[in-house]
Every structure is written in structure tokens, then in C-alpha cells.
Image 1: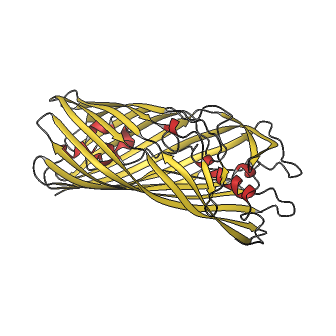
Image 2: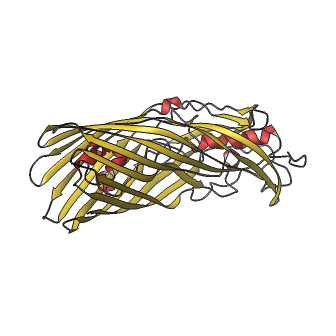
Image 3: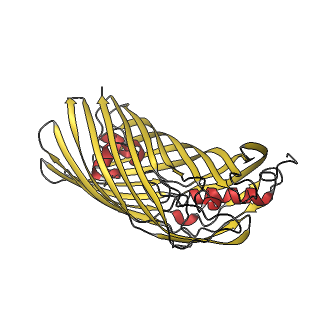
Length: 429
């Protein structure tokens, strides 16, 4: 440890930096917490309603691996990309400055444009057994306020992302019941930054870069209740991470040292029950209820990786969250299917005192439209657009440096919305 490092080399400033990981996981992603809903492109058009029962293409590997048994014999491939534009603006409502430091501004546009990719492959060994693999970004978000943001001492930048590789198998037990299972290999990476209240260095900054790889599992079943209706059940397990990396500090743009550190984060488990109903030859409907176990995340355990000493363990008091979605599709022609959907997603954030600045979360509402077009008998393309409305919620949170509360309280409101445009290509052979 460098004796010159007055920021990263001491527990107090680094502890404050580590708290930013907790700010990350109170995030405003496209599903509850900081989960990423967009595991394919086709589902955007129906707000992902009934995803665990749809089984239209190889992306069922993520939503319900049992759905692979509904795919045609041979090979099935789906490749998707979603452009996500998130708007995030803060409106100050009476925040006070920290000590002698200027209060600062509203931080500008905290959101931005990002690309969410996904890819899936399934193969039919015979008419009963399927194998497959999916690759997608399951958790993550990015927020970037200005360095003069009035909440900069609570964090002004975070980039969190999780890459999931999900090999899976499925078995058609009989004409009505199919079951499936998969293993998730997930790499989680975090880049978290904060400005530091250091006299004479207005741009003093701590930065934590850390990552870890861990495993989980998912299981699912589909039951064909009638020839026109099927029910899907799907469960994804919790995954525990020990993010390990380095905290670096800079003052006046110059590095002053590095401290090894780690932080424990648990990604929540999820359970979904979904229905798909072929109402007529042209109309189909789908719906789902999905529960996410965010209540397991109450605090964040951050420790010095050299000594094992606890640096911080802030309380977040997350609650379990849920979403409900409804969608429909209309077969306009033999080649063209039109889709639409709506959904409501409940936030895990408890109140204004537990809501955070870097990635503020609130209840959200989806409105979506799109279509699938058959290019050939064995290839289709999906397009979808969704707009997400977020409730305008507030924050009333005290700035804490290390384990010591300060006299600064950030008060304000957030204006947030998101637009998603997805494209997906599907091929069987």
C-alpha cells in the first residue's frame, strides 16, 4: 500500500467509494432493481408479456428452457440487438452544500444511449430432447452525471454489467408436459466513481474497478393445458458474487495509489408464471406474473482485501418486486404478424430515504408495439418499440463519508423515461 495515497490507501475514503456499489444496485434499469429485461428483441413488441410461455424462437432458452421442445427439428438461431435511450434528469428541491464546498448543479443528462445484444442457439437431438445455449446481458446499467453535480459526493458515475452464458437442455415428457434446465455462468463487472471532498482539489476522485464470475441455474416447465393454451413456469436462482478489484485515487488528475478491495453482491432469484393462448387462427394472447427476490439485498458488505476488515456495510432495505404484463398478436397475413403489449413493473426501492442518486428507481409502465415478418419459410425478422414511463419520485438522502454521516442532505425529484428499439433475426435449418 502506498504511503502517499491519502485517498485509496485509507479506509474512510475508500469506504465511501465502496458505497457506490450499493448505489448501483438501487438502479434504474429496464426491469426492477438493475435487472435487464431485454433478453431478446422479439419480446420488446409485447412488453415481454408471457415470455415464459411464448416459445416462438430460440430465445426461449433464457425465459423458459422447456420451450425448446416447441421449436422445429434441426437447428434454431436467434440474434438480437436493442438500442436503449434512457433519459435521467435531477431537479433539486432544497439540497444543502457539504461543508465549504460549493453545492453544484443538477448534473445534466444522467442517462444516454446503449446497445443490449443477445444470441441463442438450439438443436433438436430428436423429437423429445433439445440442447441449446444463450448469451445475453442479464443485469447492468450506466449513469454519468457531471463532475460538478450537487450529489457528486454520493457518486456521479457508475457502469455495471453482467454477461450470462446459459447452456440448457429440454425434454418433452409427453404430449402435454415439457421440462428444461440450464446453468448460468455470469461475469459481473463494476466501474464506480465519486468525487471526494478534499480541499484544494475540486476534481479529486476515487474509482473502483472490480469483477467476479459465479454460477447459478434456471429451470422451467411448460404444460399444454389444451391444444390452444399452454402454461409456463420458470425459475432462475440467486447468484452470489465476491467482486474483487482495486480502488484507485487521483488528485488534480494524477494517480496517488491503489488499495485492493472486495465487495459482496447477490443477484436476486426470479419466478415467473405465464400463459399463451391461441384464441383464433389469427389472434393470440399472452400474459405473465413475475416475482423477483430483491428483499435478500438489505445491505452491502465491503472489506479491505488485504486485512479482511469491514470498510462499510450500508443498509438499503430492498423489498421483493414484481411485474405483470399482457400482450397480444394478430396474424395480418401469412407472412406478417402484428404485436402489442403493456406491463407494470414494481420497484424494489422502499422510500425516499433509501432511493439513491446514481441510479434512482421507481415504478414503471410499458407500452409496446411491433411485428414479425417471415422472410422465407425458415427465416423471420422481429422489430419492436417500447416506451417506458417512470413514476416521478423523490430522494431525501444523507451523504455519508466512510461510516460518518455528514450534514449534507440531497433532496429532489427525478424525471426519467426510456425508449427501446429492437431487431431480431431468427433462422431454422
